[in-house]
Length: 297
Image 1 (cartoon, helix red, strand yellow):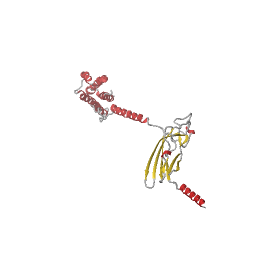
Image 2 (cartoon, one colour):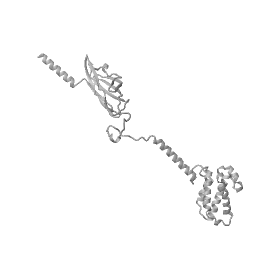
Image 3 (cartoon, one colour):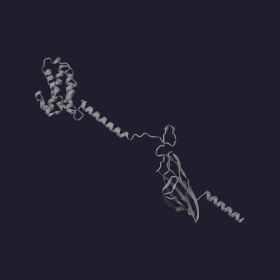
Image 4 (cartoon, one colour):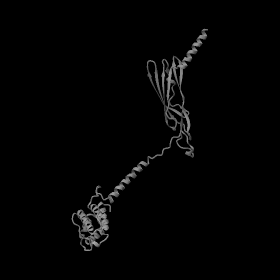
């Protein structure tokens, strides 16, 4: 009877120990389980709370550098915190993937076994294996993406990084070209170099009509522009001095000579009213002078 009672008490104590072990264990694995490649580092942590007098057996911890199924334990760190009724352990495990394949494969972080001891008695706790998938670095053979609709394949994003500098350069060229066109053909005087005498004369002539009086006003405006540019009234016999002072006007010297002929006809000829088309010629000549003035002729 005594032997039977002892057996019953032992069975009850073993059952109670199994139901309420002297430790609690929490495992934190990575959030994602896909998209890993050979060489990647994977971190997992284990939180333990042990009830004294049991303590963690340090000699039974996983060994750094151990290789199992293509997974190497790269590093292991243990921190310990004691209180009056608990001993808390934090175990940080760092694994590196060395398994490779031509196709995506499923592998697992290995199961780890931790041991606790008390007066020569030992119990163990198991950190379960954690499965994840390793992808090949490069595709093997011909790949038809429309036939591979695996939910483990993430979206393939189109890279536009190299286009951003090209877009910036293109926009810069557009802005420069736009300013160049405005500088060459614009009539306003807000841009530096656009407010010269011939630019002002062009704006004046472009607003005139085809009447003889308007033509005379346009010719007078051109003479005024030459006077402001040269510093004194420009006569045909002093044209070489003007061009020597402003070489940009050399390309239109024949047109300047023709302007003096038209000027004489418009200002001093009695048949000035019969000269048709002079206003358009005068406007085109003024535009050429404006280009020389801006250095874009």
